[in-house]
Image (cartoon, rainbow, N blue to C red; front, side, top):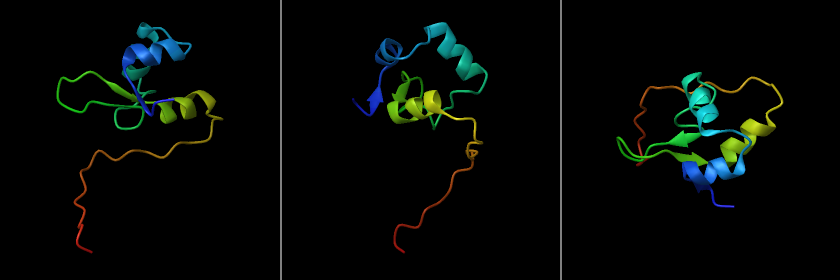
Length: 77
């Protein structure tokens, strides 16, 4: 399985419709930066398959929260 999928590839593999996926994004269930990415502004979504599988197999334990803050990483240390 490829690590990243287009939306059409994702929809062929999951039990959700396109409308269902859009609803899960709007409701904050599927999250930018965790389940999908946009490599450029206005780019199509790129889905991370491992994160989708984790979501489907999720057992209900709380998930870590994603920070929206950008962090500066010192690559010289």
